Image (tube, rainbow, N blue to C red):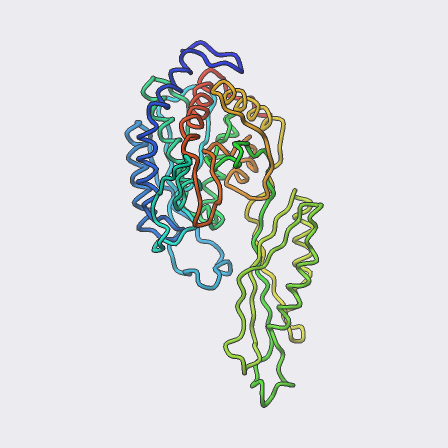
Length: 417
């Protein structure tokens, strides 16, 4: 067992971990280019399956026990206009290290991206500024690359943390298919006194996100009476007009000071301009700071609903709590301070921040597992066609991850209250 290092220093063994990862830079960039070129838009199973297979082979070579966990069906109403309704739920890939020691660690990552599988933005392009642009380069194929290499270097050196890796293929659409699997793994790891890590990218300045808002999905559906707009307009009841009114009502629930956001995007209305619409729908997303504010928000949305036999127009509300809020806790702060100290020993400045975005880290921590969910490299412009990764951050972030994992071998699981 290597000698433990002080919090702000690397032991000789840890320095060797960092050196070996630094020597892998070219291989990391090669893997990144290969994986970015695989189209893995959510729901595009040919690409998802191909990348899942590449990752499976690397994890299998580490001697891990692998399994595919079937995905669950998601509520039919969540499917928005233009989205496929009949796509089978993708599987999640789980790998468990054999003969791992010390405190258990659950590491999650997602294979899917938001980018068009058949679009022109389809490969990694290196620039002269140390950046590379490509679909999913930072969100989160760069994170998957550094995770893979970190585990491989630890294996080379005979360091055997008790890690479990769970890779899903639907994070970008809310992890509705894989949520149960993520929660189950997180619950088991928490019960064993472990910690959670997720390979989402850091903030653009390299900071870790310690606190995230929660997220929910909802749909407002309005029912009216269809008539010919020219001949019988007075007898019609416009569902579009009713939906417009409810959208404006929903906007009144926004409270930025309280961290409450309500946004409605995709809309579906009438079939023709000369027909009064008898049905209209709007899909929305809500963000909230804590459970109490979510409950208040949910009550506000459900208050728009009418009785099934109420006079037209009628309104129906569907609501799905997607990811609970992820607060900063003392355990999360302690983990973050250790990551920051490791980063400092590697010459990296690591700050702390908050985000209105959500991740699978929300689900992990909701099961009682202290989780840092921004262990990936540095980059930016997520979900855009100029999404980029800072290539120089790949090896030091991989070293931060590997050293943190190695240190868990020296620690007994935390006592669970």
